[in-house]
Image (cartoon, rainbow, N blue to C red; front, side, top):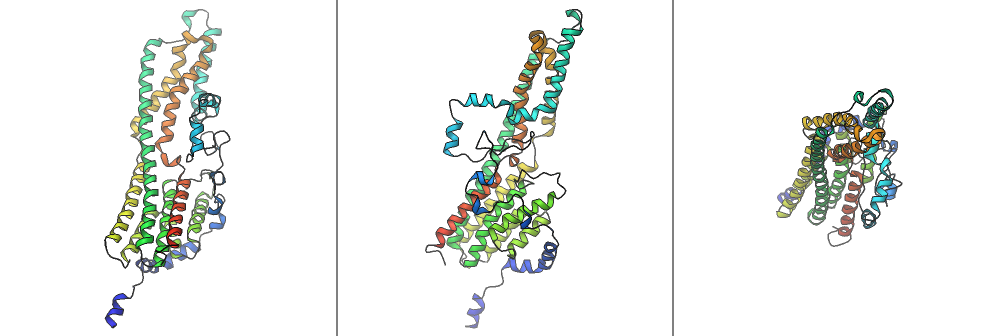
Length: 404
């Protein structure tokens, strides 16, 4: 009898042993923080996020986009619905797109300094050639035939740059999608195969927290794009938003996992990786030691793989020698363009120069935006989708045969 009792008595969970060893440090560090969940200015409670309109400030013209607050902000799309796809494929889309050209992200981002400098050169050239020189032989211009070949080469380079950036964007979206799918699978397996109720709840909370932590890990602002880096309390504000998001999951600000994850964030540790470690501790201590437990670990392994793929994209830009060379050539090309088209365009050199420059430089600017996908993807919306899916799975299993 004594042997049986000894065998089936559960040891203190491994995370408890680790936490006790550092609890004095963690609690001391957290108690000294001036920022808290109550200080969050952009946080919206999860129960109030029924629609994307309640979570984001939506663009007045394109309702599937987040409103751009500054001229230099990129375009940030939200998840599409069937209604969005219907408008996206409208036969009148080109008319709408032309009417919104001057409000588009590439045009406004290029207005200054690119278009400003090019316009100054084109305007000065036009004024000089038409009003200051006495005869045509004194006018300034260059042969357009050779310049046309250079334009073709520039267009090919910008096209390649856009394709390379789009590949990064597509891969980043696939990796985020893999996190979402794996989280749902892991939640399902948790409800089926984790034995103890408290371990199930803890595992479910960690799955929900993983997507939130990953959002703040991949995006410095945690996808709260309204927060400005120039604010004197920028770090404190980001922590307040982070803490509020996690508190919405754990519900208790004394929860040990909550305190540990918040402390990791303060110490600038790899929080998503730490969460997967806590998940594996739960799996290792699960009473059911069989292929089902192995399946749980496989899902955690997929989360770690997706995290590593996202970190690779985030930390590795396109070769900077190529992107900088392309940028230099575009600058030289756009500022020499007025000299090449003046013999043909005359007084209309300035508007023609801007139109041609926009067509080529706009492609390059879109590539610049796509190169950093985690700055334009709606990461908070993805994290919310993961939370909703996992919460739904939890509620379904909790009401059925796997409730205990």
